[in-house]
Length: 269
Image (cartoon, rainbow, N blue to C red; front, side, top):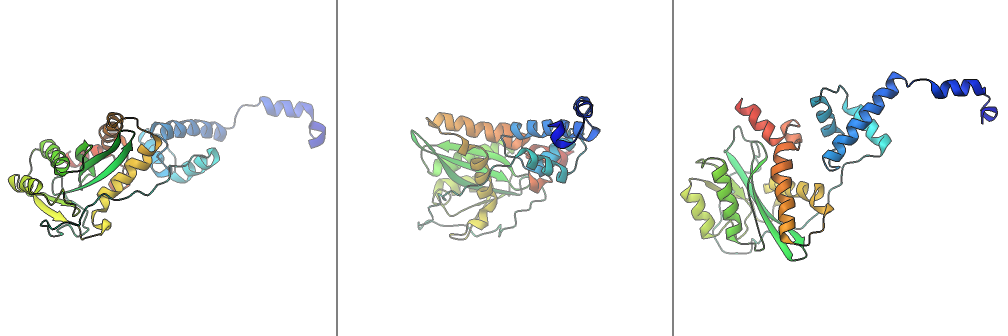
């Protein structure tokens, strides 16, 4: 091979045994850190979030460099998949006015909450999940899971949100027009706790896009990797994603790549 490339054997062995260049050593270290973060976040993070994690660990690097190193290693964030909506709006129950009007910004906690329902397949049948999200920090503040998609599902999740937030008054609670949110039980719960109901326009998913976006994130980042034998197993994975990962550890682009928990701590500081 040395003869073929026109180099001396001594020159080849000198090159082989020479120490790594500083740049190669830096890239090796950076690659290892990128892989550690990529795997720790279940292969969900792309270069922007990985860069923020590296910088938080006092590793100086740019997003462009992280992107290049990820391309070299063939690392990509998971892609999104579509899923069906669960809204049953074909009913004659009373509805609320759309007070949110796609204004998903909140100046403080407990000004605006949003809620929605999705479903997860298990070998035992469907598991339905309802969540409530505080639009200030995008934190999931209430959730409930059941094999039935009914008014109790949404009321249990709202009750959790009320307990965790200290029963605030005057919060706008925005949902779609599903029959669960139009039920007497749900409306009574809003009234008894001084909450203000708001609903999306009929058939317009963009009016509740924050909740829709959370479900997409939950599914493509986590649930699509699993096949659940039982509802209890699905419940465990959903609980861990929301309470252990999403609220506490997942960096959110809307929040300047802080986690919901970090964002609220900074706001209260």
